[in-house]
Image 1 (cartoon, one colour):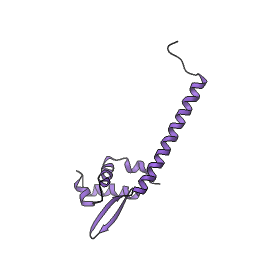
Image 2 (tube, one colour):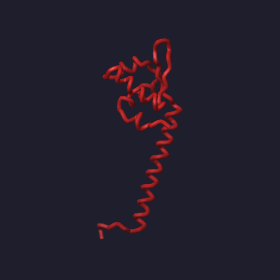
Image 3 (cartoon, one colour):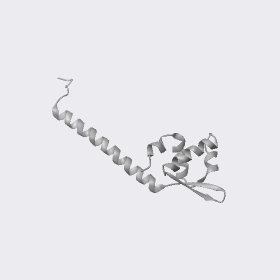
Image 4 (tube, one colour):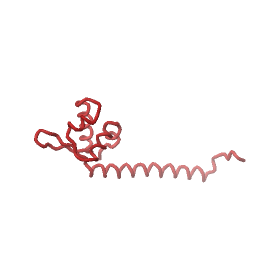
Length: 108
């Protein structure tokens, strides 16, 4: 599973993903879309590639980047399940707390 938190934890990487949502882009197009250096963009692309959130192909001398939709779907489902489990645990804790009556009613 990709570390979606690592992939989405930076605003530049989220921006790259937003651009790729519109279609495949060359490295040059991605660099031109941001106000940071080419080596900095390359580092962000490397992280997205390591997490398999994007894929890279060559077209002549150009690197073409695209979203890996399948991996994003997997990451989304796993994140959705994780958050659901967290919320379920919180609701169970609240239910148990309320059933025990260990709270003070401020109005009485």
